[in-house]
Image (tube, rainbow, N blue to C red):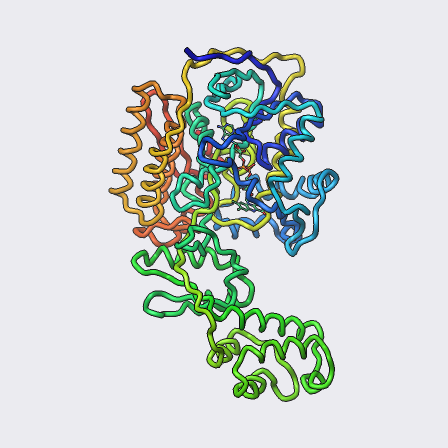
Length: 558
Ligand SMILES: Cc1cc2nc3c(=O)[nH]c(=O)nc-3n(C[C@H](O)[C@H](O)[C@H](O)COP(=O)(O)OP(=O)(O)OC[C@H]3O[C@@H](n4cnc5c(N)ncnc54)[C@H](O)[C@@H]3O)c2cc1C
Protein backbone atom coordinates (compact mmCIF):
# COMPACT_ATOMS: atom_id res chain seq x y z
CA UNK A 1 0.00 0.00 0.00
CA UNK A 2 1.49 3.37 -1.05
CA UNK A 3 0.80 6.33 1.26
CA UNK A 4 -0.08 9.68 -0.33
CA UNK A 5 0.87 13.17 0.86
CA UNK A 6 -1.69 16.03 0.70
CA UNK A 7 -1.88 17.70 -2.74
CA UNK A 8 0.03 20.96 -3.14
CA UNK A 9 -0.39 23.91 -5.54
CA UNK A 10 2.11 26.52 -6.63
CA UNK A 11 2.22 28.88 -9.58
CA UNK A 12 5.75 27.70 -10.43
CA UNK A 13 7.75 24.64 -9.41
CA UNK A 14 11.55 24.78 -9.67
CA UNK A 15 13.25 21.36 -9.75
CA UNK A 16 16.77 21.39 -8.30
CA UNK A 17 18.30 23.55 -5.59
CA UNK A 18 21.79 24.28 -6.91
CA UNK A 19 22.94 27.76 -7.94
CA UNK A 20 20.65 27.76 -11.00
CA UNK A 21 17.47 26.67 -9.22
CA UNK A 22 17.92 28.88 -6.18
CA UNK A 23 18.62 31.93 -8.35
CA UNK A 24 15.56 31.35 -10.56
CA UNK A 25 13.42 30.84 -7.43
CA UNK A 26 14.79 34.03 -5.89
CA UNK A 27 13.99 36.07 -9.03
CA UNK A 28 10.45 34.68 -9.21
CA UNK A 29 9.71 35.28 -5.51
CA UNK A 30 11.03 38.84 -5.78
CA UNK A 31 8.41 39.67 -8.43
CA UNK A 32 5.65 38.09 -6.33
CA UNK A 33 5.19 34.77 -8.18
CA UNK A 34 4.35 31.91 -5.79
CA UNK A 35 7.19 29.45 -6.24
CA UNK A 36 8.06 26.07 -4.75
CA UNK A 37 11.64 24.82 -4.92
CA UNK A 38 11.77 21.05 -4.82
CA UNK A 39 15.20 19.53 -4.38
CA UNK A 40 16.76 16.43 -2.90
CA UNK A 41 18.98 17.02 0.11
CA UNK A 42 19.38 13.48 1.47
CA UNK A 43 22.31 11.18 0.76
CA UNK A 44 20.69 7.82 0.06
CA UNK A 45 20.75 8.22 -3.74
CA UNK A 46 24.50 8.00 -4.01
CA UNK A 47 25.63 10.85 -1.73
CA UNK A 48 25.52 14.64 -1.80
CA UNK A 49 23.59 15.81 -4.82
CA UNK A 50 24.78 18.44 -7.22
CA UNK A 51 27.83 20.33 -8.46
CA UNK A 52 27.16 23.61 -6.72
CA UNK A 53 28.13 22.03 -3.38
CA UNK A 54 31.63 21.42 -4.75
CA UNK A 55 32.11 24.77 -6.46
CA UNK A 56 33.95 27.82 -5.10
CA UNK A 57 31.55 30.11 -6.96
CA UNK A 58 33.96 31.90 -9.29
CA UNK A 59 32.21 34.36 -11.62
CA UNK A 60 34.00 35.31 -14.80
CA UNK A 61 33.45 39.01 -15.49
CA UNK A 62 36.63 39.57 -17.50
CA UNK A 63 35.49 37.84 -20.71
CA UNK A 64 32.50 40.15 -21.10
CA UNK A 65 34.95 42.92 -21.95
CA UNK A 66 36.09 41.03 -25.06
CA UNK A 67 35.62 43.04 -28.21
CA UNK A 68 33.34 40.65 -30.05
CA UNK A 69 31.97 38.52 -27.26
CA UNK A 70 29.61 36.49 -29.48
CA UNK A 71 32.30 35.26 -31.85
CA UNK A 72 34.71 34.78 -28.95
CA UNK A 73 32.23 32.35 -27.36
CA UNK A 74 31.49 30.74 -30.68
CA UNK A 75 35.18 30.00 -31.21
CA UNK A 76 35.54 28.62 -27.70
CA UNK A 77 32.52 26.41 -28.30
CA UNK A 78 34.06 25.14 -31.56
CA UNK A 79 31.07 26.55 -33.49
CA UNK A 80 28.65 24.63 -31.30
CA UNK A 81 27.95 27.33 -28.76
CA UNK A 82 24.31 27.65 -27.89
CA UNK A 83 22.87 30.74 -29.67
CA UNK A 84 21.09 32.07 -26.52
CA UNK A 85 24.17 32.20 -24.33
CA UNK A 86 26.01 35.34 -25.46
CA UNK A 87 22.79 37.34 -25.62
CA UNK A 88 21.67 36.43 -22.08
CA UNK A 89 25.10 37.19 -20.64
CA UNK A 90 25.36 40.54 -22.41
CA UNK A 91 21.87 41.60 -21.40
CA UNK A 92 21.72 40.60 -17.76
CA UNK A 93 24.94 39.37 -16.28
CA UNK A 94 26.09 42.74 -14.96
CA UNK A 95 22.78 43.49 -13.24
CA UNK A 96 22.59 40.03 -11.76
CA UNK A 97 26.14 40.28 -10.39
CA UNK A 98 25.18 43.56 -8.73
CA UNK A 99 22.14 41.89 -7.24
CA UNK A 100 24.15 38.89 -6.08
CA UNK A 101 26.70 41.15 -4.42
CA UNK A 102 23.88 42.93 -2.59
CA UNK A 103 22.93 39.66 -0.86
CA UNK A 104 26.21 37.72 -0.44
CA UNK A 105 29.81 38.82 0.02
CA UNK A 106 31.98 38.54 -3.11
CA UNK A 107 35.72 39.08 -3.42
CA UNK A 108 37.87 40.00 -6.41
CA UNK A 109 39.84 37.21 -8.12
CA UNK A 110 41.93 37.10 -11.32
CA UNK A 111 39.02 36.35 -13.66
CA UNK A 112 36.47 38.55 -11.88
CA UNK A 113 34.72 37.72 -8.63
CA UNK A 114 34.13 34.77 -6.33
CA UNK A 115 32.11 33.98 -3.23
CA UNK A 116 34.00 35.31 -0.24
CA UNK A 117 33.22 32.04 1.55
CA UNK A 118 34.63 30.11 -1.47
CA UNK A 119 31.92 27.57 -0.72
CA UNK A 120 28.91 26.72 -2.87
CA UNK A 121 27.58 24.79 0.11
CA UNK A 122 27.60 27.85 2.38
CA UNK A 123 26.02 29.88 -0.42
CA UNK A 124 23.16 27.40 -0.85
CA UNK A 125 22.44 27.25 2.88
CA UNK A 126 22.14 31.02 2.88
CA UNK A 127 19.94 31.02 -0.24
CA UNK A 128 17.52 28.45 1.23
CA UNK A 129 17.00 30.67 4.29
CA UNK A 130 16.59 33.73 2.07
CA UNK A 131 14.01 32.01 -0.15
CA UNK A 132 11.93 30.97 2.86
CA UNK A 133 12.10 34.49 4.26
CA UNK A 134 10.69 35.74 0.91
CA UNK A 135 7.69 33.38 1.28
CA UNK A 136 9.01 30.55 -0.90
CA UNK A 137 8.28 26.91 -0.13
CA UNK A 138 11.17 24.43 -0.16
CA UNK A 139 10.46 20.70 -0.31
CA UNK A 140 13.20 18.16 0.27
CA UNK A 141 11.94 15.38 -2.04
CA UNK A 142 12.81 13.37 -5.13
CA UNK A 143 10.89 14.27 -8.30
CA UNK A 144 9.82 11.07 -10.06
CA UNK A 145 7.62 12.37 -12.87
CA UNK A 146 7.00 15.54 -14.85
CA UNK A 147 3.39 16.01 -15.96
CA UNK A 148 3.78 18.22 -19.00
CA UNK A 149 3.69 17.98 -22.76
CA UNK A 150 3.63 20.26 -25.78
CA UNK A 151 0.14 21.58 -24.90
CA UNK A 152 -0.13 21.54 -21.08
CA UNK A 153 1.93 21.91 -17.98
CA UNK A 154 0.18 20.35 -14.97
CA UNK A 155 2.90 19.75 -12.39
CA UNK A 156 5.03 16.99 -11.00
CA UNK A 157 4.95 13.89 -8.86
CA UNK A 158 7.46 13.37 -6.08
CA UNK A 159 8.49 10.95 -3.39
CA UNK A 160 9.36 11.89 0.17
CA UNK A 161 10.24 9.46 2.97
CA UNK A 162 8.45 6.64 1.13
CA UNK A 163 5.26 8.68 0.52
CA UNK A 164 4.22 9.95 -2.88
CA UNK A 165 2.87 13.44 -3.55
CA UNK A 166 1.52 15.75 -6.22
CA UNK A 167 2.55 19.35 -6.84
CA UNK A 168 0.23 21.11 -9.30
CA UNK A 169 1.72 24.12 -11.01
CA UNK A 170 1.39 26.20 -14.14
CA UNK A 171 5.05 26.43 -15.03
CA UNK A 172 8.09 24.29 -14.28
CA UNK A 173 11.70 25.43 -14.21
CA UNK A 174 14.13 22.54 -14.63
CA UNK A 175 17.41 23.14 -12.78
CA UNK A 176 18.33 19.59 -11.84
CA UNK A 177 22.00 19.61 -12.87
CA UNK A 178 23.94 17.68 -15.52
CA UNK A 179 24.51 14.01 -16.38
CA UNK A 180 28.32 13.74 -16.18
CA UNK A 181 28.16 11.29 -13.30
CA UNK A 182 26.75 8.65 -15.63
CA UNK A 183 30.42 8.02 -16.48
CA UNK A 184 32.63 5.83 -14.31
CA UNK A 185 35.52 8.29 -14.68
CA UNK A 186 33.54 11.29 -13.40
CA UNK A 187 34.26 13.36 -10.30
CA UNK A 188 31.25 12.09 -8.31
CA UNK A 189 28.69 14.86 -8.08
CA UNK A 190 25.67 12.54 -8.39
CA UNK A 191 24.51 14.44 -11.43
CA UNK A 192 22.89 11.49 -13.16
CA UNK A 193 20.42 13.19 -15.49
CA UNK A 194 17.25 11.59 -14.09
CA UNK A 195 15.16 14.70 -14.81
CA UNK A 196 16.63 14.88 -18.31
CA UNK A 197 15.30 11.33 -18.82
CA UNK A 198 11.89 12.34 -17.40
CA UNK A 199 11.80 15.35 -19.70
CA UNK A 200 12.53 13.17 -22.75
CA UNK A 201 9.69 10.85 -21.65
CA UNK A 202 7.29 13.81 -21.86
CA UNK A 203 8.26 14.49 -25.50
CA UNK A 204 11.05 16.96 -24.76
CA UNK A 205 14.06 17.50 -27.01
CA UNK A 206 17.69 17.34 -25.85
CA UNK A 207 20.72 18.63 -27.75
CA UNK A 208 24.47 17.97 -27.96
CA UNK A 209 24.45 15.16 -25.39
CA UNK A 210 27.74 13.83 -26.78
CA UNK A 211 29.63 16.84 -25.37
CA UNK A 212 31.06 16.55 -21.88
CA UNK A 213 33.80 18.73 -20.48
CA UNK A 214 36.76 16.46 -19.91
CA UNK A 215 39.40 17.63 -17.50
CA UNK A 216 42.68 16.88 -19.26
CA UNK A 217 44.69 16.05 -16.15
CA UNK A 218 42.80 13.39 -14.26
CA UNK A 219 45.07 11.56 -11.82
CA UNK A 220 44.52 7.90 -12.66
CA UNK A 221 45.64 6.73 -9.20
CA UNK A 222 43.31 8.93 -7.16
CA UNK A 223 40.57 9.43 -9.80
CA UNK A 224 40.77 13.14 -8.93
CA UNK A 225 41.31 16.30 -10.92
CA UNK A 226 44.70 17.95 -10.94
CA UNK A 227 44.23 21.71 -11.14
CA UNK A 228 46.44 23.00 -13.96
CA UNK A 229 48.09 25.57 -11.70
CA UNK A 230 49.39 22.67 -9.57
CA UNK A 231 51.19 21.03 -12.50
CA UNK A 232 52.94 24.02 -13.98
CA UNK A 233 56.66 23.18 -14.23
CA UNK A 234 55.90 19.49 -14.81
CA UNK A 235 57.41 17.23 -17.41
CA UNK A 236 54.76 15.55 -19.53
CA UNK A 237 55.68 12.36 -21.29
CA UNK A 238 54.61 8.90 -22.40
CA UNK A 239 55.94 5.57 -21.20
CA UNK A 240 58.73 5.68 -23.82
CA UNK A 241 59.90 8.98 -22.34
CA UNK A 242 58.74 11.00 -25.35
CA UNK A 243 58.14 14.46 -23.95
CA UNK A 244 55.21 16.68 -24.90
CA UNK A 245 57.10 19.97 -24.97
CA UNK A 246 54.24 22.12 -26.27
CA UNK A 247 52.00 21.15 -23.31
CA UNK A 248 54.87 21.59 -20.85
CA UNK A 249 55.62 25.06 -22.21
CA UNK A 250 52.03 26.23 -21.92
CA UNK A 251 51.75 24.81 -18.41
CA UNK A 252 55.02 26.55 -17.48
CA UNK A 253 53.66 29.84 -18.83
CA UNK A 254 50.49 29.54 -16.73
CA UNK A 255 48.21 28.87 -19.70
CA UNK A 256 47.10 25.59 -18.20
CA UNK A 257 43.37 26.01 -18.76
CA UNK A 258 43.98 26.41 -22.50
CA UNK A 259 45.68 23.04 -22.65
CA UNK A 260 42.79 20.81 -21.55
CA UNK A 261 41.42 20.30 -25.01
CA UNK A 262 44.88 19.64 -26.48
CA UNK A 263 45.74 17.20 -23.69
CA UNK A 264 42.42 15.32 -23.99
CA UNK A 265 42.91 14.94 -27.72
CA UNK A 266 46.45 13.57 -27.33
CA UNK A 267 45.48 11.10 -24.58
CA UNK A 268 42.39 9.86 -26.46
CA UNK A 269 43.89 9.59 -29.92
CA UNK A 270 46.59 7.25 -28.61
CA UNK A 271 44.48 5.07 -26.37
CA UNK A 272 47.11 2.32 -26.05
CA UNK A 273 49.79 4.64 -24.68
CA UNK A 274 50.00 5.80 -21.07
CA UNK A 275 50.87 9.42 -20.32
CA UNK A 276 52.54 10.75 -17.19
CA UNK A 277 53.06 13.96 -15.31
CA UNK A 278 56.37 14.26 -13.50
CA UNK A 279 56.35 16.90 -10.81
CA UNK A 280 59.90 16.28 -9.57
CA UNK A 281 61.03 19.76 -10.72
CA UNK A 282 58.12 21.56 -9.09
CA UNK A 283 60.25 23.10 -6.24
CA UNK A 284 62.58 24.60 -8.85
CA UNK A 285 59.61 25.90 -10.83
CA UNK A 286 58.15 27.63 -7.75
CA UNK A 287 61.48 29.30 -6.97
CA UNK A 288 61.76 30.43 -10.62
CA UNK A 289 58.27 31.90 -10.49
CA UNK A 290 59.07 33.83 -7.34
CA UNK A 291 62.21 35.24 -8.89
CA UNK A 292 60.44 36.06 -12.17
CA UNK A 293 57.70 37.96 -10.42
CA UNK A 294 60.16 40.08 -8.42
CA UNK A 295 62.14 40.82 -11.59
CA UNK A 296 58.99 41.79 -13.46
CA UNK A 297 57.78 44.08 -10.72
CA UNK A 298 61.06 45.81 -10.01
CA UNK A 299 63.47 45.38 -12.92
CA UNK A 300 66.47 46.13 -10.70
CA UNK A 301 70.02 45.51 -11.86
CA UNK A 302 71.67 42.31 -10.69
CA UNK A 303 74.81 44.18 -9.67
CA UNK A 304 72.91 46.22 -7.10
CA UNK A 305 71.09 43.25 -5.72
CA UNK A 306 74.44 41.87 -4.48
CA UNK A 307 74.55 44.69 -1.94
CA UNK A 308 70.97 45.59 -1.11
CA UNK A 309 68.26 43.67 0.76
CA UNK A 310 65.60 43.63 -1.93
CA UNK A 311 63.05 41.03 -2.96
CA UNK A 312 65.11 40.00 -6.01
CA UNK A 313 68.09 39.16 -3.87
CA UNK A 314 66.07 37.00 -1.52
CA UNK A 315 64.32 35.22 -4.38
CA UNK A 316 67.65 34.69 -6.15
CA UNK A 317 69.26 33.28 -3.00
CA UNK A 318 66.33 30.95 -2.51
CA UNK A 319 66.69 29.67 -6.04
CA UNK A 320 70.47 29.21 -5.76
CA UNK A 321 70.06 27.27 -2.51
CA UNK A 322 68.25 24.57 -4.46
CA UNK A 323 71.54 23.70 -6.18
CA UNK A 324 74.70 22.11 -4.72
CA UNK A 325 77.17 24.74 -3.46
CA UNK A 326 79.74 24.03 -6.17
CA UNK A 327 77.22 24.70 -8.96
CA UNK A 328 75.81 27.96 -7.70
CA UNK A 329 78.21 30.21 -9.58
CA UNK A 330 77.40 28.43 -12.85
CA UNK A 331 73.71 28.74 -12.19
CA UNK A 332 74.11 32.40 -11.28
CA UNK A 333 75.89 33.02 -14.57
CA UNK A 334 73.15 31.25 -16.46
CA UNK A 335 70.52 33.52 -14.97
CA UNK A 336 72.36 36.78 -15.17
CA UNK A 337 72.83 38.24 -18.59
CA UNK A 338 75.54 40.91 -18.48
CA UNK A 339 74.68 42.84 -15.34
CA UNK A 340 70.94 42.17 -15.43
CA UNK A 341 68.73 39.50 -13.99
CA UNK A 342 66.59 38.15 -16.80
CA UNK A 343 63.13 36.64 -16.54
CA UNK A 344 63.61 32.86 -16.74
CA UNK A 345 61.73 31.50 -19.74
CA UNK A 346 60.76 27.87 -20.39
CA UNK A 347 63.95 27.15 -22.39
CA UNK A 348 66.22 28.50 -19.64
CA UNK A 349 64.22 26.50 -17.09
CA UNK A 350 65.12 23.32 -19.06
CA UNK A 351 68.82 24.22 -18.74
CA UNK A 352 68.57 24.88 -15.01
CA UNK A 353 66.90 21.50 -14.51
CA UNK A 354 70.10 19.72 -15.61
CA UNK A 355 71.93 20.81 -12.43
CA UNK A 356 68.96 20.41 -10.10
CA UNK A 357 69.08 17.49 -7.69
CA UNK A 358 65.68 15.81 -7.41
CA UNK A 359 64.82 15.21 -3.76
CA UNK A 360 61.56 13.42 -4.30
CA UNK A 361 60.29 11.92 -7.55
CA UNK A 362 56.60 12.72 -8.09
CA UNK A 363 55.11 10.94 -11.09
CA UNK A 364 51.54 9.96 -11.85
CA UNK A 365 49.59 8.65 -14.80
CA UNK A 366 47.10 11.03 -16.40
CA UNK A 367 43.89 10.57 -18.36
CA UNK A 368 40.81 12.70 -19.04
CA UNK A 369 38.24 12.77 -16.26
CA UNK A 370 34.61 13.63 -16.96
CA UNK A 371 34.03 16.98 -15.30
CA UNK A 372 30.59 18.27 -16.29
CA UNK A 373 28.09 18.10 -19.09
CA UNK A 374 27.79 20.59 -21.92
CA UNK A 375 24.73 19.24 -23.74
CA UNK A 376 21.32 18.83 -22.18
CA UNK A 377 17.74 20.00 -22.49
CA UNK A 378 17.18 21.91 -25.76
CA UNK A 379 15.92 25.46 -25.48
CA UNK A 380 15.50 28.79 -27.18
CA UNK A 381 16.24 31.53 -24.69
CA UNK A 382 15.67 28.95 -21.90
CA UNK A 383 12.14 27.98 -23.09
CA UNK A 384 11.92 24.25 -23.89
CA UNK A 385 9.63 22.63 -26.46
CA UNK A 386 7.16 21.66 -23.68
CA UNK A 387 4.47 24.18 -22.74
CA UNK A 388 5.55 26.46 -19.87
CA UNK A 389 8.59 24.33 -19.09
CA UNK A 390 11.85 26.30 -18.79
CA UNK A 391 15.41 25.22 -18.20
CA UNK A 392 18.48 26.68 -16.53
CA UNK A 393 21.79 25.47 -15.10
CA UNK A 394 23.83 22.51 -16.12
CA UNK A 395 20.76 20.50 -17.13
CA UNK A 396 20.38 22.68 -20.24
CA UNK A 397 22.51 22.63 -23.35
CA UNK A 398 24.76 25.63 -22.86
CA UNK A 399 28.17 26.44 -24.29
CA UNK A 400 29.01 23.62 -26.63
CA UNK A 401 32.24 21.77 -26.98
CA UNK A 402 34.42 23.98 -24.83
CA UNK A 403 33.90 26.39 -21.99
CA UNK A 404 35.33 29.09 -19.81
CA UNK A 405 36.08 28.96 -16.05
CA UNK A 406 33.55 30.99 -14.09
CA UNK A 407 31.06 31.39 -16.93
CA UNK A 408 28.62 28.65 -15.85
CA UNK A 409 27.57 30.50 -12.69
CA UNK A 410 27.49 33.76 -14.64
CA UNK A 411 25.20 32.24 -17.25
CA UNK A 412 22.90 30.72 -14.65
CA UNK A 413 22.34 34.11 -13.01
CA UNK A 414 21.45 35.61 -16.40
CA UNK A 415 19.19 32.70 -17.40
CA UNK A 416 17.30 32.90 -14.07
CA UNK A 417 16.48 36.52 -14.82
CA UNK A 418 15.35 35.72 -18.41
CA UNK A 419 13.11 32.86 -17.24
CA UNK A 420 11.51 35.09 -14.61
CA UNK A 421 10.63 37.60 -17.33
CA UNK A 422 9.16 34.89 -19.58
CA UNK A 423 7.00 33.52 -16.77
CA UNK A 424 5.82 36.94 -15.60
CA UNK A 425 4.79 37.82 -19.18
CA UNK A 426 3.20 34.50 -20.00
CA UNK A 427 1.06 33.51 -17.04
CA UNK A 428 -2.34 35.12 -16.45
CA UNK A 429 -2.72 35.94 -12.77
CA UNK A 430 -6.11 34.31 -12.17
CA UNK A 431 -5.62 30.88 -13.77
CA UNK A 432 -5.51 27.80 -11.55
CA UNK A 433 -3.13 24.86 -12.08
CA UNK A 434 -4.73 21.85 -13.82
CA UNK A 435 -5.17 18.55 -11.98
CA UNK A 436 -3.62 15.18 -12.89
CA UNK A 437 -3.63 11.58 -11.64
CA UNK A 438 -0.80 10.16 -9.55
CA UNK A 439 0.98 7.03 -10.72
CA UNK A 440 0.96 4.53 -7.84
CA UNK A 441 4.56 3.51 -8.05
CA UNK A 442 7.72 4.30 -6.14
CA UNK A 443 11.13 5.12 -7.41
CA UNK A 444 13.95 2.66 -6.84
CA UNK A 445 17.64 3.67 -6.83
CA UNK A 446 19.59 0.69 -8.16
CA UNK A 447 23.29 1.38 -7.45
CA UNK A 448 24.42 -1.89 -9.08
CA UNK A 449 22.68 -1.15 -12.37
CA UNK A 450 24.13 2.36 -12.25
CA UNK A 451 27.65 0.87 -12.05
CA UNK A 452 27.01 -1.22 -15.18
CA UNK A 453 25.61 1.78 -17.12
CA UNK A 454 28.62 3.84 -16.08
CA UNK A 455 31.08 1.20 -17.16
CA UNK A 456 29.34 0.70 -20.52
CA UNK A 457 29.22 4.41 -21.29
CA UNK A 458 32.85 4.82 -20.39
CA UNK A 459 34.08 1.77 -22.31
CA UNK A 460 31.90 2.10 -25.42
CA UNK A 461 31.50 5.83 -25.77
CA UNK A 462 34.33 7.64 -24.07
CA UNK A 463 37.37 5.40 -24.06
CA UNK A 464 37.04 4.30 -27.65
CA UNK A 465 34.13 4.60 -30.02
CA UNK A 466 33.14 2.15 -32.69
CA UNK A 467 29.78 2.07 -34.50
CA UNK A 468 29.05 -1.63 -34.13
CA UNK A 469 29.91 -1.71 -30.40
CA UNK A 470 27.87 1.47 -29.92
CA UNK A 471 24.89 -0.28 -31.49
CA UNK A 472 25.36 -3.32 -29.24
CA UNK A 473 25.50 -1.02 -26.25
CA UNK A 474 22.29 0.72 -27.34
CA UNK A 475 20.58 -2.67 -27.67
CA UNK A 476 21.61 -3.53 -24.13
CA UNK A 477 20.23 -0.21 -22.79
CA UNK A 478 16.93 -0.84 -24.62
CA UNK A 479 16.53 -4.46 -23.52
CA UNK A 480 17.30 -3.62 -19.90
CA UNK A 481 14.80 -0.76 -20.05
CA UNK A 482 12.08 -2.97 -21.58
CA UNK A 483 12.45 -5.48 -18.73
CA UNK A 484 12.09 -2.73 -16.15
CA UNK A 485 9.01 -1.34 -17.91
CA UNK A 486 7.44 -4.82 -17.96
CA UNK A 487 8.10 -5.03 -14.21
CA UNK A 488 6.25 -1.74 -13.60
CA UNK A 489 9.42 0.08 -12.61
CA UNK A 490 8.59 3.14 -14.73
CA UNK A 491 9.33 5.63 -11.95
CA UNK A 492 12.66 4.07 -11.00
CA UNK A 493 15.71 6.19 -11.71
CA UNK A 494 17.16 3.35 -13.80
CA UNK A 495 14.60 3.99 -16.56
CA UNK A 496 15.64 7.65 -16.78
CA UNK A 497 19.37 6.75 -16.79
CA UNK A 498 18.86 4.18 -19.54
CA UNK A 499 16.96 6.68 -21.68
CA UNK A 500 19.72 9.28 -21.23
CA UNK A 501 22.49 6.73 -21.82
CA UNK A 502 20.90 5.59 -25.07
CA UNK A 503 20.29 9.19 -26.11
CA UNK A 504 24.01 9.94 -25.54
CA UNK A 505 25.05 6.97 -27.68
CA UNK A 506 22.65 7.92 -30.47
CA UNK A 507 23.89 11.53 -30.41
CA UNK A 508 27.46 10.20 -30.75
CA UNK A 509 26.49 7.99 -33.68
CA UNK A 510 24.92 10.83 -35.61
CA UNK A 511 27.96 13.14 -35.17
CA UNK A 512 30.45 11.55 -37.58
CA UNK A 513 33.42 13.77 -36.69
CA UNK A 514 35.54 14.80 -33.68
CA UNK A 515 34.89 18.24 -32.23
CA UNK A 516 36.15 19.81 -29.04
CA UNK A 517 35.82 17.36 -26.17
CA UNK A 518 33.97 14.87 -28.36
CA UNK A 519 36.41 12.44 -29.87
CA UNK A 520 35.73 9.54 -32.27
CA UNK A 521 38.71 7.38 -33.16
CA UNK A 522 37.01 6.46 -36.47
CA UNK A 523 36.46 10.16 -37.44
CA UNK A 524 39.38 12.00 -35.82
CA UNK A 525 38.91 15.41 -37.51
CA UNK A 526 36.46 18.26 -37.24
CA UNK A 527 34.18 18.51 -40.30
CA UNK A 528 33.59 22.19 -41.03
CA UNK A 529 30.37 21.33 -42.87
CA UNK A 530 29.00 20.44 -39.45
CA UNK A 531 29.75 23.83 -37.87
CA UNK A 532 26.56 25.09 -36.15
CA UNK A 533 24.94 21.66 -36.32
CA UNK A 534 23.56 20.30 -33.06
CA UNK A 535 22.68 16.70 -32.37
CA UNK A 536 19.00 16.51 -31.35
CA UNK A 537 17.31 13.56 -29.63
CA UNK A 538 13.68 12.62 -28.98
CA UNK A 539 12.12 9.71 -27.17
CA UNK A 540 8.98 8.05 -28.42
CA UNK A 541 7.39 6.55 -25.33
CA UNK A 542 4.84 4.42 -27.20
CA UNK A 543 7.44 2.31 -28.98
CA UNK A 544 10.26 3.02 -26.49
CA UNK A 545 12.45 4.38 -29.27
CA UNK A 546 15.03 7.19 -29.31
CA UNK A 547 15.76 9.08 -32.51
CA UNK A 548 18.77 11.35 -33.11
CA UNK A 549 19.59 13.77 -35.91
CA UNK A 550 22.02 16.62 -36.58
CA UNK A 551 20.10 19.87 -37.07
CA UNK A 552 20.77 23.59 -37.19
CA UNK A 553 19.69 25.54 -34.11
CA UNK A 554 16.69 27.06 -35.89
CA UNK A 555 15.27 23.54 -36.42
CA UNK A 556 15.58 22.19 -32.86
CA UNK A 557 11.86 21.66 -32.46
CA UNK A 558 10.81 19.60 -35.45
C1 LIG B 1 34.24 20.86 -8.60
C2 LIG B 1 33.53 21.89 -9.45
C3 LIG B 1 33.88 23.23 -9.35
C4 LIG B 1 33.24 24.18 -10.15
N1 LIG B 1 33.57 25.49 -10.00
C5 LIG B 1 32.91 26.43 -10.72
C6 LIG B 1 33.14 27.82 -10.50
O1 LIG B 1 33.92 28.21 -9.64
N2 LIG B 1 32.47 28.72 -11.28
C7 LIG B 1 31.58 28.33 -12.23
O2 LIG B 1 31.01 29.19 -12.89
N3 LIG B 1 31.31 27.01 -12.42
C8 LIG B 1 31.94 26.07 -11.69
N4 LIG B 1 31.64 24.74 -11.86
C9 LIG B 1 30.52 24.39 -12.71
C10 LIG B 1 29.22 24.78 -11.95
O3 LIG B 1 29.50 24.83 -10.58
C11 LIG B 1 28.09 23.83 -12.17
O4 LIG B 1 27.83 23.79 -13.56
C12 LIG B 1 26.86 24.36 -11.41
O5 LIG B 1 27.11 24.30 -10.02
C13 LIG B 1 25.65 23.54 -11.73
O6 LIG B 1 24.61 24.10 -10.98
P1 LIG B 1 23.13 23.62 -11.16
O7 LIG B 1 22.31 24.45 -10.24
O8 LIG B 1 22.76 23.58 -12.57
O9 LIG B 1 23.11 22.09 -10.69
P2 LIG B 1 23.57 21.37 -9.36
O10 LIG B 1 24.36 22.23 -8.46
O11 LIG B 1 24.18 20.10 -9.80
O12 LIG B 1 22.21 21.11 -8.59
C14 LIG B 1 21.24 20.23 -9.08
C15 LIG B 1 20.24 19.98 -7.99
O13 LIG B 1 19.15 19.25 -8.53
C16 LIG B 1 18.70 18.32 -7.58
N5 LIG B 1 18.02 17.22 -8.29
C17 LIG B 1 18.44 16.50 -9.36
N6 LIG B 1 17.51 15.60 -9.71
C18 LIG B 1 16.48 15.76 -8.84
C19 LIG B 1 15.22 15.10 -8.68
N7 LIG B 1 14.83 14.10 -9.47
N8 LIG B 1 14.41 15.49 -7.67
C20 LIG B 1 14.79 16.51 -6.84
N9 LIG B 1 15.96 17.16 -6.94
C21 LIG B 1 16.79 16.79 -7.93
C22 LIG B 1 19.97 17.85 -6.88
O14 LIG B 1 19.64 17.37 -5.60
C23 LIG B 1 20.80 19.15 -6.84
O15 LIG B 1 20.56 19.84 -5.65
C24 LIG B 1 32.25 23.78 -11.07
C25 LIG B 1 31.89 22.43 -11.17
C26 LIG B 1 32.51 21.50 -10.37
C27 LIG B 1 32.09 20.07 -10.48
